Image 1 (cartoon, rainbow, N blue to C red):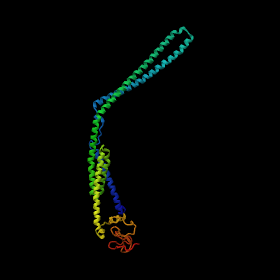
Image 2 (cartoon, rainbow, N blue to C red; image 1 turned 90 degrees about the horizontal axis):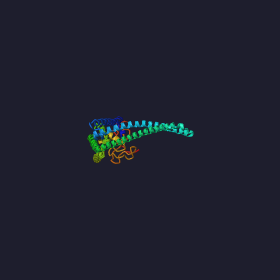
Image 3 (cartoon, rainbow, N blue to C red; image 1 turned 180 degrees about the vertical axis):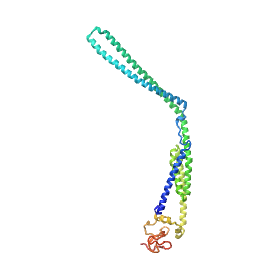
Image 4 (cartoon, helix red, strand yellow; image 1 turned 60 degrees about the vertical axis):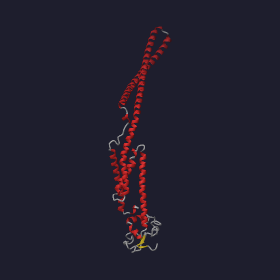
Amino acid sequence: MIKALRVPERLFAIAMWGVSLVFASFLIGLGGKIVGDLPGVDQSIQLEQYIDASALRAVNARQDTLRIDERTRSGERERAELALRASQNAYNAARDGFSNWIATRTATTDPSQDPEVIQRTRDLDVLGVGARDAETAVERIDAELLRIRQAQSDAMLTEEALRDAARSTYERALFWHELKIFGVRLALTLPLLVLAGWMIARKRRSEYWPLYRGFVLFAVFAFFVELVPYLPSYGGYIRYGVGILASAIVGHYAIRAMRRYLARRQEEAQRTEAERRHALGYEEALKRMAGGVCPGCERAIAGGVNSNSNYCVHCGMMLYDQCGACDTRKNAFFQFCPSCGVPATGDAVPVLTTT
């Protein structure tokens, strides 16, 4: 029906919607800044704030010491493994050499080589002892690493016990913190929603309605969108409860408005056609006609806007007449004849025939 308005009026209506949206966007931004700058509203709390600080520091210091010891022992083990590998290689090489040499000694059976056999055996025993010592060193370091890892596990269990002991206090504090944030935001947004409802009920006909409409959009967004991330577990009940209440209020006013409208229509139906026509505004009559409804009773025109009906079949209001100058059939609410331009006021006559 906006097409029935003048072009400047259509542009103005679109521009006013733009003003409403821009005004709402700035209000939303300002509201977010105000709520974000409130002291303590967005400050988060952590579980560590409720753990025994001295005990936690002691456990963390113990864990740091154990991590350093673990890195140190791991480096020592790598070096001990290298020494063990070198000792084992030396022992294996000496043993292979001795085996080859002893095979030659057996083949030649030279008694003069017996002292060398004894010496080689002693050297091989020394290498074997060195390999065993290196293996013992690796085993000792492994035992140290096992002790350190067990101590780390104990420290982790101690830290977890401290966290478990503080968890109930933390959850209770978190509940009240979330309730505080939700309460502050609800205290700010709920009055906005109530005020927006009042504006809808009282200010829709105001010349400043585009600004009021922007505020209404801001209030609805603030309550039903920005408040959602801060709802506690039971907050959904509040949101839906407010939604139900707002819907009930809107429905109440809608029903009352409909009753007033029906009463007004019944009262208008008792008037003469001339009185009803005189009460209609020019722009409103054109909009209703363009929408295919009778300006008098707002029922659909029989056959649509392109029909040959000259009167409303429901209330009898004249919809089309003839120009008093050129007999052109025209909209009865036109102020000038579209064919000859003669003013329609006082010159129009009812259509007597249908062409």
